[in-house]
Every structure is written in C-alpha cells, then in structure tokens.
Image 1 (cartoon, rainbow, N blue to C red):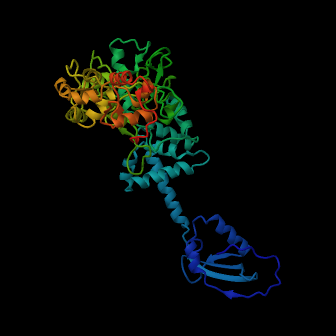
Image 2: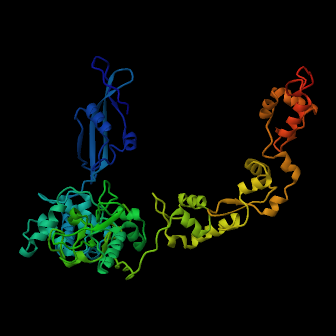
Image 3: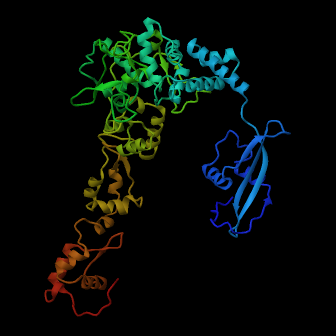
Length: 552
C-alpha cells in the first residue's frame, strides 16, 4: 500500500472496483490471521484513515471458527482521483473461548497453590501435575502477575519467588497476595519478605541473585583466622586473604563497597595505609560471616548473622536461610530449563596456622622462572600468566603451574637461562676490550652473526659474550672501527678545510683514510697531524685549487 494523501477535492470521477487484496494483506501480516496480534502502528493508522471506521468484522455464517471482514476504503489513485475500494475476506478466529480461558486460569491457581501455599518446588509441582518445568514456571509467574489488587509486578521478583527452595518466604508472598493474615510468630518475617516482592525490583531469574562461591571462600578464610585469634578489627591484608582464598587482592577489594554493581559490599575497608579489610558486624556486635543475596536480604548485601540466626537488624530467619544455597554463574539464567538456586558444599577451610606464600614482584618472579622481565611482562599482557595489576604481583603457585613452566622451558631453549655471577662479558666490556663503540659491535658483529651472543645476567635479558670469541675478532677490523677515529666532519674541521676538499684529498690518496663496514670514512688523528705538518703552506696542507674529481 502507498500512503498517498487523498485530495480534498472530490469532483473527480468515482469508479467502483472489486479487488482481491488477500495476497498483499497476507504479505503485510495485518489482515490474514491478525486476530490476537498487534498491528504495526503505521499500517493501523493508514487503514483507519482509508476506511473511516467502516470496517465490519462478524462471524462467518457458513464457516465455523472464521471471521468475515468487510471494509470500504477511500483509495487514492495515481491520477489524483479517489476510488471506493470494497474488500471482503475471511480470517481464522483465534480468540480463545471462555471455557478454555477458565481452565487455564484454574491451572495457574493450582500451580500457585502447590508452589507458594504448600511449599513445593517447581520440579515437584511439575511432576505432580504432569507438566513440563517451563509450563509450570510460566503459569506460576502469570498468576503472580495477574493478581489484583496486589501482585508481583516485576519479572525478576516473580522468578525469584518461584525459584525459592524454602517454603517460608513463598508462604509469606502467598499470604500477601491472597490477603491472608500470617501466624503471629511469623508476622515479623512476613513483614520482611512480602514488601520486597510486591514492588518493582531488578533481580535475576533466581532466588539467590548471583554466584557466591568466592564470597563464601573468603568468609571461610576470615572465619578460620578469627578462630585462630587474629584481630579482625584492625583489618586483614587483602593480599593475605587473596593468597589464602586463591584469588587476587583486587577481587578482595571488589567485595567491599563501591560505585558499581561489581562491588558486593560483603566486607568493609579499614581506613589507613595499605589495602586492609574486615567483615561487618550485626546489631548485636557479631561478625557477619554468611552471605545469601536474595530480595529480602539485599538491604544488607546478603549478609546474615550465624550467631543470632537472623538478619543484621535482628529479624529471626528460618533455618534454611543459613544453609549453603548458591545462585547461577551466568548473567541470564533460563528458569524454565533448570533451577537457578542450588545447594552447594561448604568451601574447604584454611589450614590452621598456615601462612600464605608471599606474592612476588615481576623481578622476583622472573628470577624464579629464570626468564627475562620483559618476557614475563609480555606473557602477562597476553593472558598466559595470571597476575595482579597496579602493582604487578605474581603468586608462586601460578608460576609453578605446568603451563607457565612450559613457557619458561621454551624460553630457555631459545635464549638460555638467567644466570648470576656469569664470567662472560657484557656489551660494554666487549666494546672496551675491542676498543670500538658499542653500536659498531651491535651493527657489524652481533647482527651479522660474526660474534655469538647469549642472554643471561641478573635480569635474564643481558647480552653475554664468550671472551674467546671476542679475542678472535681480527685486528684489522678493530683498527677500522676504533673508538678514537674521527669522522669526516670532525677531521675537516681539524684541518681547516671543507668536507668536499677532505673527501677529494682522501680519494686522491693524499690523506690516509679507513672505511668501516658501513661504508663511512674514518680518519686517524695521527695521520691528520702528520699531513698538516708535511704541508704547512696551505690550509690543511691541501691544494685548494685542485680540480681533481670528487669521490661520491
């Protein structure tokens, strides 16, 4: 259809045509089978303007479960005229009958009663009813969303209470939605739980919001240290906790308060120098060493008091809250496929009295592996060797792993090991021994393969040379590259002539010249002095009027 505006003038000739539009209607997905589906706004506005609300939709007398649609459209033609276009077609009546709607509502009520009122899990209710897990989850969430006047408005809240493995919070939500008064001893707990679910919230598709394996492991380490008499009030070093828990100190700091979602709020920072943390306390002064991040506990970052068996403000909780429930690892969990909250084992306790291995600096780690610091830095930047950043620190257990050891072995096969107290010569010593500049040794001996070099030394990346190989360099090469030779500019200035004149004199053989492996001229100071003494009559002892050809 082309949305051409109908002209205001209606004096043009009017023709009545009968046109079958079932094919384009099916193409647009608007008319054929549109019952129960949202029509695109642009197409809906166009049909409304063209038909002027004259569309008739009635059950077809001869075809069961079919609707006959009749309409007259004021169709603008290309010549500017308006054509009354009558369309008539049938579509399937997809509207659910009232009996089926009532049966579906009864199914939702049954699923909600089994899961929320009676405390069954989704899997148990699905097995009792003979439904799939996805069907059961969908019906419970639909019942929670459709309740009136009180409902669970957010999908995260509906998924969380459906996924909850404990009967007590589900019963509290059921009583709030059905306007049932809770028992007197459960009233405070119900006042804690129900208000969190009947308001818009952002939550994962599980009761426990996230995976808490790392948090539980760190809290277990703190529990062990407190049991050994360590003063947690003064703060615990983040790197010490990280080494014991098998993580990085940055991950420990992410368990404190911070500006983003990655900060958990499980621990608190201790003011002062260094990175030190400690657990939080409840209202009664006990350490909060259990974490269960759910909607009802998110006000305290999921922390619970195992001593009071309550929330930090003193609200008593059912025993199930202190068990080891864990949330999904992935960011988006499909509750229709599997439960999001699962029961896990307790983390392994820290060894009594065990002290962590210290973290190594990059120099210490390179010395431990007998490689260069630059190689180790490149491996860390490429993700091959894990380390902490700012400053860079390495755990010895990581360096002992087979993968890192394999990297070091390949490095040793290529460059050799780092060595201390090596009797071989380093590059400055080689240059002094030969009496030549260092860059000549690099450019004309090392790069060309004339002088063999290895790597080692204190940092593992120092060039090392065998004294015998250095002494084997010919004396003629040393003379042509001696450090005391003058370049053409310095030699011309000493003689008081131009470079062109000196180059001509050298090419003519009047002044001795040496040529390096790079093709540059070098002059001995003694040769220049002798030439100047032998020709005192002219500047530099040269024939300034000579027209001899100049060498390139």
